Amino acid sequence: MKIAVVKEIRQGENRVAITPQVAQQLIKNGHELVVESQCGYASNFSDEAYSKVGCTIVAKADAIAGCDILAKVNAPDASEIALLKEGAASISYMYAGFNAELVQQLNARKISAFSMDAIPRISRAQNMDALSSQANLAGYKAVILGAANMGKIFPMLMTAAGTVIPSRVLIYGAGVAGLQAIATAKRLGAIVEVSDVRPETKEQVESLGGKFIEVKSDEAAKVEGGYAKEVSAEYLAKQKEAVNKSLFMADLVITTALVMGRKAPILITEDQVKQMKLGSVIVDMAVEQGGNCELSELDKTVVKHGVSVIGQGNLPATLPQNASELYAKNIQNLLTHLATKDAFKWELEEDITKGTLICHQGNILK
Image (cartoon, rainbow, N blue to C red; front, side, top):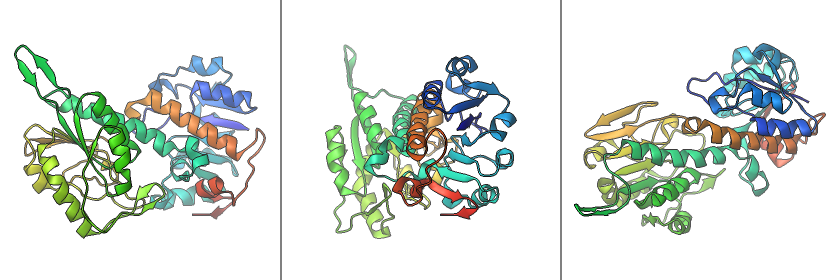
Protein backbone atom coordinates (compact mmCIF):
# COMPACT_ATOMS: atom_id res chain seq x y z
CA MET A 1 0.00 0.00 0.00
CA LYS A 2 1.04 3.60 -0.55
CA ILE A 3 1.65 5.46 2.73
CA ALA A 4 1.87 9.26 2.79
CA VAL A 5 3.81 11.21 5.40
CA VAL A 6 3.29 14.96 5.55
CA LYS A 7 4.49 17.88 7.62
CA GLU A 8 2.39 18.56 10.70
CA ILE A 9 0.49 21.84 10.55
CA ARG A 10 -0.36 22.28 14.23
CA GLN A 11 1.50 25.26 15.67
CA GLY A 12 4.49 24.14 17.74
CA GLU A 13 4.30 20.55 16.50
CA ASN A 14 7.81 19.35 15.65
CA ARG A 15 7.17 15.60 15.45
CA VAL A 16 6.78 13.55 12.29
CA ALA A 17 4.66 10.41 12.02
CA ILE A 18 7.18 8.19 10.20
CA THR A 19 10.96 8.39 10.56
CA PRO A 20 13.43 7.26 7.88
CA GLN A 21 14.31 4.15 9.90
CA VAL A 22 10.68 3.05 10.16
CA ALA A 23 10.06 4.03 6.53
CA GLN A 24 12.86 1.67 5.52
CA GLN A 25 11.21 -1.19 7.43
CA LEU A 26 7.82 -0.48 5.88
CA ILE A 27 9.35 -0.44 2.40
CA LYS A 28 11.06 -3.78 3.10
CA ASN A 29 7.62 -5.11 4.06
CA GLY A 30 6.26 -4.17 0.64
CA HIS A 31 4.74 -0.73 1.20
CA GLU A 32 5.46 2.41 -0.83
CA LEU A 33 6.33 5.60 1.05
CA VAL A 34 5.64 9.08 -0.35
CA VAL A 35 6.94 11.91 1.79
CA GLU A 36 6.30 15.66 1.75
CA SER A 37 9.50 17.63 1.39
CA GLN A 38 10.96 18.71 4.77
CA CYS A 39 8.26 16.89 6.72
CA GLY A 40 10.88 15.58 9.14
CA TYR A 41 13.14 18.62 9.25
CA ALA A 42 11.94 19.83 12.68
CA SER A 43 12.67 16.33 14.04
CA ASN A 44 16.20 16.33 12.60
CA PHE A 45 15.37 14.02 9.66
CA SER A 46 16.41 15.36 6.26
CA ASP A 47 14.82 14.71 2.87
CA GLU A 48 18.07 12.98 1.94
CA ALA A 49 17.63 10.53 4.83
CA TYR A 50 14.17 9.59 3.52
CA SER A 51 15.39 9.33 -0.08
CA LYS A 52 18.27 7.05 0.90
CA VAL A 53 15.88 4.43 2.30
CA GLY A 54 13.65 4.48 -0.76
CA CYS A 55 11.00 7.13 -0.06
CA THR A 56 9.73 9.37 -2.84
CA ILE A 57 9.82 13.10 -2.03
CA VAL A 58 6.77 14.92 -3.41
CA ALA A 59 4.59 17.94 -2.79
CA LYS A 60 2.04 17.63 -0.01
CA ALA A 61 -1.01 17.56 -2.29
CA ASP A 62 0.50 14.82 -4.43
CA ALA A 63 1.41 12.74 -1.38
CA ILE A 64 -2.09 12.83 0.08
CA ALA A 65 -4.10 12.55 -3.12
CA GLY A 66 -2.54 9.29 -4.23
CA CYS A 67 -2.14 7.52 -0.91
CA ASP A 68 -3.92 4.52 0.58
CA ILE A 69 -2.90 5.51 4.12
CA LEU A 70 -2.20 8.98 5.51
CA ALA A 71 0.06 8.74 8.59
CA LYS A 72 0.10 11.77 10.87
CA VAL A 73 0.68 12.75 14.49
CA ASN A 74 -2.27 15.11 14.73
CA ALA A 75 -5.58 14.52 12.99
CA PRO A 76 -5.88 15.73 9.39
CA ASP A 77 -7.63 19.07 8.94
CA ALA A 78 -10.39 19.85 6.43
CA SER A 79 -7.95 20.72 3.62
CA GLU A 80 -6.09 17.43 4.03
CA ILE A 81 -9.28 15.39 4.29
CA ALA A 82 -10.49 16.95 1.03
CA LEU A 83 -7.37 15.66 -0.76
CA LEU A 84 -7.81 12.06 0.38
CA LYS A 85 -9.37 9.66 -2.08
CA GLU A 86 -12.61 8.04 -1.03
CA GLY A 87 -11.99 4.84 0.88
CA ALA A 88 -8.46 5.74 1.98
CA ALA A 89 -7.34 5.33 5.60
CA SER A 90 -5.84 7.75 8.09
CA ILE A 91 -3.82 6.95 11.23
CA SER A 92 -3.26 9.71 13.78
CA TYR A 93 -4.31 11.03 17.15
CA MET A 94 -7.99 11.96 16.90
CA TYR A 95 -9.56 12.26 20.38
CA ALA A 96 -12.82 11.44 18.66
CA GLY A 97 -14.96 12.04 21.73
CA PHE A 98 -14.04 15.73 21.60
CA ASN A 99 -13.99 16.10 17.81
CA ALA A 100 -17.38 15.09 16.43
CA GLU A 101 -17.06 17.47 13.47
CA LEU A 102 -13.72 15.93 12.45
CA VAL A 103 -15.24 12.44 12.56
CA GLN A 104 -18.15 13.61 10.42
CA GLN A 105 -15.78 15.10 7.83
CA LEU A 106 -13.75 11.90 7.59
CA ASN A 107 -16.85 9.73 7.46
CA ALA A 108 -18.42 11.84 4.72
CA ARG A 109 -15.54 10.82 2.44
CA LYS A 110 -15.74 7.19 3.62
CA ILE A 111 -12.29 7.43 5.17
CA SER A 112 -11.36 4.60 7.55
CA ALA A 113 -9.91 6.54 10.46
CA PHE A 114 -7.75 4.89 13.13
CA SER A 115 -7.09 6.84 16.34
CA MET A 116 -3.71 6.40 18.05
CA ASP A 117 -5.12 7.72 21.33
CA ALA A 118 -7.61 4.84 21.39
CA ILE A 119 -5.12 1.95 21.50
CA PRO A 120 -6.54 -0.44 24.13
CA ARG A 121 -4.44 -0.86 27.27
CA ILE A 122 -3.88 -4.60 26.81
CA SER A 123 -0.59 -6.47 26.90
CA ARG A 124 -0.44 -7.33 23.18
CA ALA A 125 -0.98 -3.68 22.23
CA GLN A 126 1.77 -2.25 24.44
CA ASN A 127 4.15 -1.71 21.53
CA MET A 128 1.45 0.32 19.74
CA ASP A 129 0.56 2.51 22.73
CA ALA A 130 1.49 5.99 21.58
CA LEU A 131 -0.05 7.70 24.61
CA SER A 132 2.36 5.82 26.87
CA SER A 133 5.43 6.28 24.69
CA GLN A 134 4.85 10.01 24.49
CA ALA A 135 3.88 10.40 28.16
CA ASN A 136 7.14 8.74 29.12
CA LEU A 137 9.10 11.48 27.35
CA ALA A 138 6.79 14.18 28.68
CA GLY A 139 7.40 13.07 32.28
CA TYR A 140 11.14 13.42 31.76
CA LYS A 141 10.82 16.82 30.10
CA ALA A 142 8.53 18.15 32.84
CA VAL A 143 11.29 17.65 35.41
CA ILE A 144 13.92 19.26 33.16
CA LEU A 145 11.59 22.18 32.47
CA GLY A 146 10.93 22.62 36.16
CA ALA A 147 14.64 22.45 36.98
CA ALA A 148 15.41 25.13 34.40
CA ASN A 149 12.93 27.48 36.07
CA MET A 150 13.97 26.86 39.68
CA GLY A 151 16.42 29.08 41.49
CA LYS A 152 18.26 26.15 43.05
CA ILE A 153 19.80 22.79 42.18
CA PHE A 154 18.31 19.34 42.79
CA PRO A 155 21.05 17.36 44.60
CA MET A 156 22.71 17.83 47.95
CA LEU A 157 26.03 19.61 47.51
CA MET A 158 28.72 19.69 50.19
CA THR A 159 31.27 22.46 49.72
CA ALA A 160 33.85 24.34 51.76
CA ALA A 161 31.36 27.20 51.93
CA GLY A 162 28.63 25.00 53.38
CA THR A 163 26.09 22.34 52.46
CA VAL A 164 23.32 22.85 49.91
CA ILE A 165 20.27 20.81 50.88
CA PRO A 166 18.49 18.79 48.15
CA SER A 167 15.37 20.11 46.46
CA ARG A 168 11.98 18.65 47.27
CA VAL A 169 9.76 17.49 44.39
CA LEU A 170 6.07 16.64 44.70
CA ILE A 171 4.38 14.68 41.90
CA TYR A 172 0.64 14.29 41.52
CA GLY A 173 -0.13 11.08 39.65
CA ALA A 174 1.90 7.88 39.25
CA GLY A 175 0.92 6.93 35.73
CA VAL A 176 3.44 6.63 32.89
CA ALA A 177 4.36 10.33 32.96
CA GLY A 178 4.46 10.50 36.74
CA LEU A 179 6.66 7.43 37.11
CA GLN A 180 9.17 8.80 34.60
CA ALA A 181 9.12 12.14 36.43
CA ILE A 182 9.88 10.32 39.70
CA ALA A 183 12.79 8.44 38.14
CA THR A 184 14.21 11.60 36.55
CA ALA A 185 13.93 13.72 39.68
CA LYS A 186 15.56 10.98 41.77
CA ARG A 187 18.42 10.65 39.28
CA LEU A 188 19.01 14.37 39.67
CA GLY A 189 19.23 13.99 43.44
CA ALA A 190 15.90 15.38 44.65
CA ILE A 191 13.72 14.19 47.52
CA VAL A 192 10.56 12.98 45.79
CA GLU A 193 7.06 12.58 47.21
CA VAL A 194 4.08 11.30 45.23
CA SER A 195 0.30 11.40 45.53
CA ASP A 196 -2.08 9.19 43.55
CA VAL A 197 -5.74 8.26 44.02
CA ARG A 198 -4.86 4.64 43.22
CA PRO A 199 -3.30 3.02 46.32
CA GLU A 200 -1.93 0.15 44.23
CA THR A 201 0.66 2.54 42.73
CA LYS A 202 2.47 2.77 46.07
CA GLU A 203 4.76 -0.16 45.28
CA GLN A 204 5.77 1.32 41.92
CA VAL A 205 6.49 4.71 43.49
CA GLU A 206 8.64 3.21 46.24
CA SER A 207 10.53 1.00 43.76
CA LEU A 208 11.75 4.21 42.11
CA GLY A 209 12.80 5.77 45.39
CA GLY A 210 9.80 8.03 45.92
CA LYS A 211 7.74 8.41 49.08
CA PHE A 212 4.03 7.64 48.59
CA ILE A 213 1.60 9.96 50.38
CA GLU A 214 -1.27 7.82 51.61
CA VAL A 215 -4.83 9.11 51.85
CA LYS A 216 -6.84 7.46 54.61
CA SER A 217 -10.18 6.62 52.99
CA ASP A 218 -12.43 3.65 52.25
CA GLU A 219 -12.80 4.94 48.69
CA ALA A 220 -10.34 3.84 46.02
CA ALA A 221 -10.29 5.13 42.47
CA LYS A 222 -11.39 2.76 39.73
CA VAL A 223 -9.32 2.52 36.58
CA GLU A 224 -10.78 2.71 33.08
CA GLY A 225 -8.63 2.45 29.95
CA GLY A 226 -5.47 3.05 31.94
CA TYR A 227 -6.82 6.23 33.55
CA ALA A 228 -8.30 6.79 36.99
CA LYS A 229 -12.02 7.45 36.89
CA GLU A 230 -13.19 10.60 38.62
CA VAL A 231 -13.33 10.29 42.41
CA SER A 232 -15.67 12.03 44.84
CA ALA A 233 -15.25 15.58 46.12
CA GLU A 234 -14.90 14.11 49.62
CA TYR A 235 -11.92 12.00 48.53
CA LEU A 236 -10.28 14.95 46.78
CA ALA A 237 -10.68 16.98 49.98
CA LYS A 238 -8.93 14.24 51.98
CA GLN A 239 -6.18 14.03 49.37
CA LYS A 240 -5.70 17.80 49.54
CA GLU A 241 -5.36 17.64 53.32
CA ALA A 242 -2.84 14.80 53.16
CA VAL A 243 -0.74 16.45 50.49
CA ASN A 244 -0.74 20.06 51.71
CA LYS A 245 2.26 19.68 54.03
CA SER A 246 4.39 18.34 51.16
CA LEU A 247 2.99 20.91 48.73
CA PHE A 248 3.95 23.84 50.94
CA MET A 249 7.50 22.48 51.37
CA ALA A 250 8.05 21.62 47.69
CA ASP A 251 10.47 23.39 45.39
CA LEU A 252 8.98 21.75 42.29
CA VAL A 253 5.48 20.35 41.80
CA ILE A 254 4.50 18.29 38.74
CA THR A 255 0.86 17.46 38.11
CA THR A 256 -0.15 14.69 35.70
CA ALA A 257 -3.72 13.81 36.72
CA LEU A 258 -6.15 13.11 33.86
CA VAL A 259 -9.61 11.55 33.73
CA MET A 260 -10.51 9.88 30.43
CA GLY A 261 -13.13 11.87 28.55
CA ARG A 262 -13.41 14.54 31.23
CA LYS A 263 -11.82 17.85 32.19
CA ALA A 264 -8.74 17.38 34.35
CA PRO A 265 -9.44 17.69 38.09
CA ILE A 266 -8.31 20.80 39.96
CA LEU A 267 -5.78 19.60 42.53
CA ILE A 268 -4.07 22.89 43.42
CA THR A 269 -6.17 25.98 44.11
CA GLU A 270 -5.02 29.58 44.14
CA ASP A 271 -5.32 29.57 47.94
CA GLN A 272 -2.88 26.67 48.09
CA VAL A 273 -0.48 28.44 45.72
CA LYS A 274 -0.47 31.42 48.09
CA GLN A 275 0.91 29.15 50.81
CA MET A 276 3.70 27.65 48.69
CA LYS A 277 7.35 28.67 49.02
CA LEU A 278 8.53 31.77 47.19
CA GLY A 279 10.37 30.73 44.05
CA SER A 280 8.76 27.31 43.81
CA VAL A 281 7.61 25.98 40.43
CA ILE A 282 4.53 24.09 39.24
CA VAL A 283 4.63 22.21 35.91
CA ASP A 284 1.03 21.39 34.96
CA MET A 285 1.13 18.48 32.53
CA ALA A 286 -2.67 18.37 32.36
CA VAL A 287 -2.98 21.91 31.04
CA GLU A 288 -4.33 20.84 27.63
CA GLN A 289 -7.28 19.18 29.38
CA GLY A 290 -8.01 22.20 31.57
CA GLY A 291 -5.16 21.88 34.04
CA ASN A 292 -4.67 20.51 37.55
CA CYS A 293 -3.73 23.94 38.91
CA GLU A 294 -6.34 26.66 39.07
CA LEU A 295 -3.84 29.25 37.80
CA SER A 296 -2.47 27.34 34.80
CA GLU A 297 -2.72 28.89 31.34
CA LEU A 298 -2.08 26.87 28.19
CA ASP A 299 1.34 27.50 26.61
CA LYS A 300 2.15 30.21 29.15
CA THR A 301 4.27 30.56 32.26
CA VAL A 302 2.55 32.76 34.81
CA VAL A 303 4.01 33.97 38.08
CA LYS A 304 1.44 34.33 40.84
CA HIS A 305 2.12 34.84 44.54
CA GLY A 306 5.82 34.23 43.92
CA VAL A 307 5.22 30.83 42.28
CA SER A 308 5.92 30.06 38.60
CA VAL A 309 3.11 28.03 37.02
CA ILE A 310 4.24 26.44 33.75
CA GLY A 311 1.46 25.43 31.36
CA GLN A 312 3.56 24.12 28.47
CA GLY A 313 1.33 22.07 26.19
CA ASN A 314 2.44 19.21 23.95
CA LEU A 315 5.62 18.42 25.87
CA PRO A 316 6.58 15.48 23.60
CA ALA A 317 6.94 17.94 20.70
CA THR A 318 9.77 19.62 22.63
CA LEU A 319 11.74 16.35 22.26
CA PRO A 320 10.83 15.81 18.60
CA GLN A 321 13.54 13.39 17.52
CA ASN A 322 12.96 10.82 20.26
CA ALA A 323 9.21 11.40 20.26
CA SER A 324 9.02 10.82 16.50
CA GLU A 325 11.15 7.68 16.73
CA LEU A 326 8.84 6.15 19.34
CA TYR A 327 5.61 7.29 17.68
CA ALA A 328 6.73 5.95 14.30
CA LYS A 329 7.43 2.54 15.86
CA ASN A 330 3.96 2.63 17.44
CA ILE A 331 2.41 3.22 14.01
CA GLN A 332 4.56 0.54 12.40
CA ASN A 333 3.48 -2.01 14.99
CA LEU A 334 -0.18 -1.07 14.64
CA LEU A 335 -0.02 -1.19 10.85
CA THR A 336 1.71 -4.58 10.92
CA HIS A 337 -1.14 -5.85 13.08
CA LEU A 338 -3.91 -4.31 10.96
CA ALA A 339 -2.75 -5.01 7.43
CA THR A 340 -0.67 -6.92 4.93
CA LYS A 341 1.41 -5.16 2.28
CA ASP A 342 -1.60 -5.22 -0.04
CA ALA A 343 -4.67 -4.45 2.10
CA PHE A 344 -6.20 -4.09 5.54
CA LYS A 345 -7.51 -7.26 7.17
CA TRP A 346 -10.68 -5.53 8.44
CA GLU A 347 -11.21 -7.82 11.44
CA LEU A 348 -13.78 -5.46 12.89
CA GLU A 349 -14.47 -7.44 16.07
CA GLU A 350 -10.79 -7.96 16.94
CA ASP A 351 -9.94 -5.94 20.09
CA ILE A 352 -7.27 -3.62 18.69
CA THR A 353 -9.10 -2.94 15.43
CA LYS A 354 -12.38 -2.40 17.27
CA GLY A 355 -10.72 -0.07 19.77
CA THR A 356 -8.92 2.15 17.27
CA LEU A 357 -11.24 2.28 14.24
CA ILE A 358 -13.44 5.36 14.60
CA CYS A 359 -15.25 5.37 11.25
CA HIS A 360 -15.28 2.98 8.30
CA GLN A 361 -17.05 2.80 4.90
CA GLY A 362 -19.45 5.61 5.73
CA ASN A 363 -20.30 4.36 9.23
CA ILE A 364 -19.29 6.04 12.50
CA LEU A 365 -18.31 3.26 14.89
CA LYS A 366 -17.71 5.32 18.04
